[in-house]
Image (cartoon, rainbow, N blue to C red; front, top):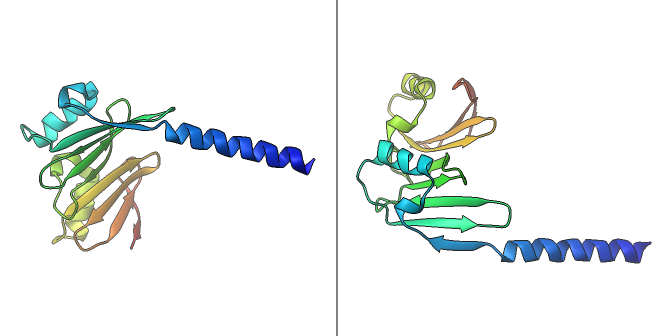
Length: 147
């Protein structure tokens, strides 16, 4: 019985390793991004040209990563919906921040700027210039501070 379990675990581990080994990262042009991602870039970054765009294809998913000269990075899912915008220490465009989130931060952290925002299934996570990470639900209501 133990031998069968070890064999099954070994086969599963090999399969998972094989699937991850098939990941393929490719540099692509802006025109090859999904339409949603192209619209997002045009809306929030205007005519700025990316330094590079990477398409990361795996067996079960595809993601895109865009980086600009100022080191701002944007991650998109396979449909071109943004998942994360990271200014890498620099302020990100305020047009990306939901109004309720921006209002909370402006009221409670007047001198701070948002340098990163992530959108997940449970809501938004922002990082401020002072290092605080604030979490908000999908409606933009503040839920907690992480440090």
